Length: 171
Image (cartoon, rainbow, N blue to C red; front, side, top):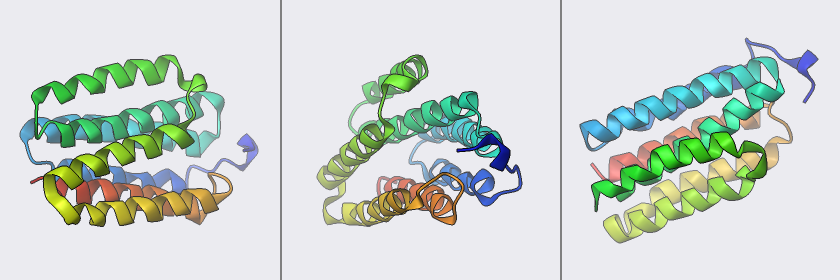
């Protein structure tokens, strides 16, 4: 990542708007509000990173991405208990405080797996829909090479679609 390659008009800056889709499909008003807040934070944090490629921007991107996927898991878990929402502030504080100690290449798939397992219990084989999209998103991330590629933009879009599919299932 070279900050001199930063470009505020590049597609990775704008493709992360797809992360807001789940808020529109959330099953409850509370879920919609939490997902709107965490997705807006992610869109802003990711945009700052992709527009500047700064270390501070990278921290914003990573911490908000991890908090966002934790909030998706909370929304799916909240189908069973409202206590699932406790995850969100804990994740936000933890991921902001320990951003550089966390491997997002482990934490993001772990949260996605937790979401898919909960969806399998709740919705059965329909969980294959978000699983397939999450898997394609992961493949795009694996193939992107650096955050300034079309594959990285595809990762943003597929991640938003997978999360939207999860929310659609629990409506």
